[in-house]
Image: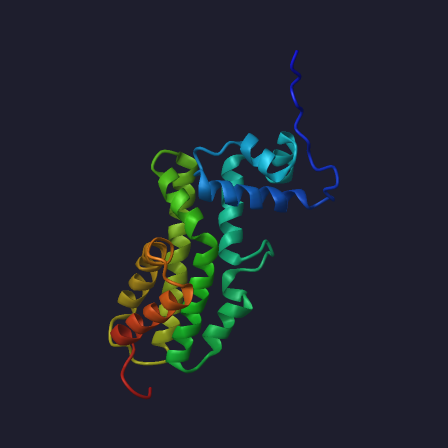
Length: 211
């Protein structure tokens, strides 16, 4: 007679560690399996915690998804807005528009390295899941605000070749899909994508010569 093997959970998890393990597990699963195909049970197994712990430490699957997206955007779970992060304020404080563009796009690439697969999973899920659709709409709104602030920052430092709105639109529309296609499908190094995107925006949006 065969016996059913019981799942082994991590008994050494300290108080406060469970949420991080759960979000890391969910990030991996959402990125590889997709949001819809990933269950709370999957997340619990991947994180090495009991199923009820997923709910008590983080929450339901939509809440976990939001936490995963927020942490991937910011790089950690510290309650600090993106605009207050040192790497963002460094780009804003840089007076030279070309150098500032380099720094802003460095930040964009850094965020995309963490979030591009989750964003693709979220966009796919948004077509069939109301919670995912609401979060996808919110993420797009946040990204619009962020790219508009970058465009406004650069417009304040020089006379743009294009409209400020056009620059904001390019910053919003190009990176996620182009980054995925070029870096993950075509094998471009992240540094090559960064240099290419800087070159495109510099040619289209920034003036020639000293500003």
